[in-house]
Structure formats: C-alpha cells, structure tokens
Picture 1 (tube, one colour):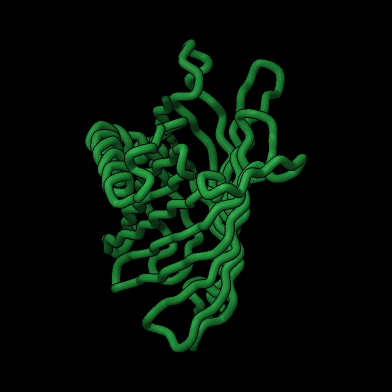
Picture 2 (cartoon, rainbow, N blue to C red; picture 1 turned 45 degrees about the vertical axis):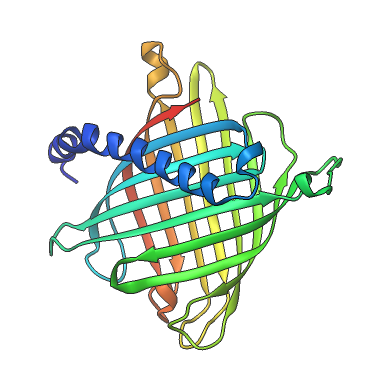
Length: 262
C-alpha cells in the first residue's frame, strides 16, 4: 500500500466529506423526528458523527483493492436511538465506484410503559433497518432489540430481525450484535468497535456471516484533543458475501477517522 498516495487522498477529500457528514446526519435526524409521533416530546441525549477514510485489499466480488469513505452517525434520544452510515467505495484497479447505506432507528418501549430495571438489560426496543446500495441492493428489517446494561462509555446491543429482500423469494432472519469498547494501556487510549451479522438463506442467497471489527488509537490525545482523530485497522470476515456461495472475504484496511460528539 502506498502511504504517500493514501495521505494525499485523505487530505483532498477530508474537509468536503466531513461537511457532507454533518449535513447528512442532521438531515436524517430531522426527517426521522418529523415523521415520529414522539417528535413533540423528543430530547437529544447524545450525538456523534464521524468520517472514516480507508484503503485496503483482499476484498471479494469485484476488485480486491479498494478505497472507501464512510460517513457515520449515531445518536440517542428520549424515544430510542439512531444509527446510520453511508459508504462511498472506489475500486482501485477498475476505478468503478459504488455506494451503500443503512438507516437504523430503534424505538424504545419505555415511553409505552415497559420500564426496565434489570442487572443485564438497559432497554428493550423495536429495531428497524433500511439497506440500500448500488445495483438496486435493498432490504428491509424489523424485530426486537436489546441494549445491554454496561458501564458508561461502553455500548453493546443485540437485534433479532425479520429480514426481507423483495428481489428474493421468501424472507429470512438476521442476528446483529454491535459494540463500542474504549480502553487504555498506560497513557494510550484505544477504541474497539464493530459488529457481526449472521443471517439465514433467502431465495437463492446463501446464509452469511459478516464480522467487521475495528481497533483504533486515539491520536488526538497526544495533542491535547482526545476523542477527535483516530487511526487503526479494520478487518473484514464475510462468508458467502452478498449470499454468493463460496465468496468468502478476508480483507484488511488501514483507516483514519475524524469524530465529533456532543
């Protein structure tokens, strides 16, 4: 991997994409709140936006070398929470570009009288997800979700979905677990986050396992601005990618991430 070209690529797109991220996440929140029956009583509890730039190889289905820009948003509200991201993907050898995004609001049951007081469970929610991408990729998911009761700054959630891709016969299930775990070693701060999706077969699509962990060091801490700039790696483990039998991905990418939270 050419580090010089990667650095120049990062510099050229960083400011433009970070602005797009702020606009995108603000628009998502606005549209969701406007369409929610709880809009009048909604309070923002937490909001975080990030821009991640990656370059790696070892990918399946298309070019094995890719550059990616990810705009990501996560927020917590009095009515539940929202996670959304947008991937802009460029294949390095063929120069083909594509996109993929997900919007995943989850609606807490507490406003409807289901109050949780548990050692293990923090909240029970109705989890929903819209998946869209290039070449008319799409899927609709709905099901119960759980936020696990962990110390502050830690996050762990599990969702069990009914999943439907209208281009396939029938429907299937999906189990998703996502986490964010900060930790320290000496004077160094790290963030370990990611997700794992396990889904059943649907029509001609085979069952899949998609595991994407990231480990990042907080570079901003060394300049007195912790929690803003991270660098690290992401690993891709995807069996039967896109439901294609035998398309097993094992890829690694370098990443640089800018985060803004309030």
